[in-house]
Image 1 (cartoon, rainbow, N blue to C red):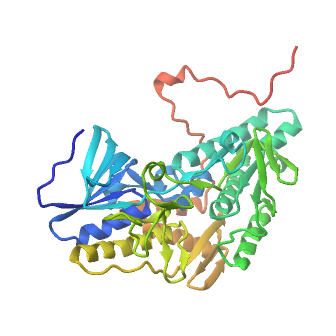
Image 2 (image 1 turned 180 degrees about the vertical axis):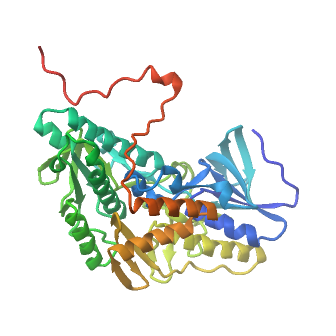
Image 3 (image 1 turned 120 degrees about the vertical axis):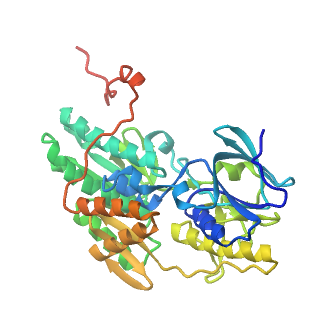
Length: 442
């Protein structure tokens, strides 16, 4: 097991996680740390994913590479190591990670946990086997391919009941992800159906299930109702106050016994702790790392936590911070100041942040938003949503590429390519998609 070479008097801040929280913290620290300090960023992936834009990948509004940004483009003086954290030796202050060249021990003076959470498909029986989660770029591409595959199968199917099941796409969860995915799916199907002449518009349906009396409970009620109206106006079947009790290959069974036939179920609910949290002896509550008011991990010297993995109380509201990109960035900015204060021997400050608002898209050129108390719906909200995430993208070149693609998508139909990553050696081994039912005996 090897360790990166460091000078004797060099001090190190190690950040585990390359999401919004981790990259923002590295960017802040690398510009302000004293000369004998350095930042090391560890991440299992070489890029950060703009998760709020994954729904647009599902609907082919953007290409997959537009919702990710290479970490090496986002940091300048920070050392990046692509590694999966295996363990942490708190006594010796070492992070043990599996890198491309084998196990590594990285010494730290301060260690920051800034990784996210994982999808929890155990919240509903059968979901792990029959539902499609949406947490990663690969998930978004898989859902998009599944949608195109099902529409193509409708053209070849004679049984009207099977055709209706194939064409009903169920989204479980009426939060931000659920609303955005439902809207993108409806727009995608509307644009794609012209290329499938043997599929009727009436055979394609998006159903959104929400276990509450309105959508987007994080937003004011009027915006939740506006989102419902926007989705329903485009033919999406919004079911409020219903709970998915079981997911099967043939559809979803609700808590009241009703069965909704569907061959594609998308899951946007349920999270579980990152495996690193489960392995380490750190204090947790509700699956998230417990922290003090300044984001130091309870009972551990030199250990900090921010982002989705951390349970950070907002001193301004006396409520725990929601696991959103906005709060992850705000926590990273405050922690950077706290680390600099700790290094200089000054007192740290409690995390206190006033939310600037929240936004959600409900489909092509439609959305809802609350910004600094101002409530918007329709095209202005959608435009504001895109402007915010465009500004978050690193490098001018990447911003320009995405702006061009978004502008193009406002006037032209979405791409319907069924993109498969088949290698030459696998091509001959490919087999047709298995039928939904056994063929009738001759």
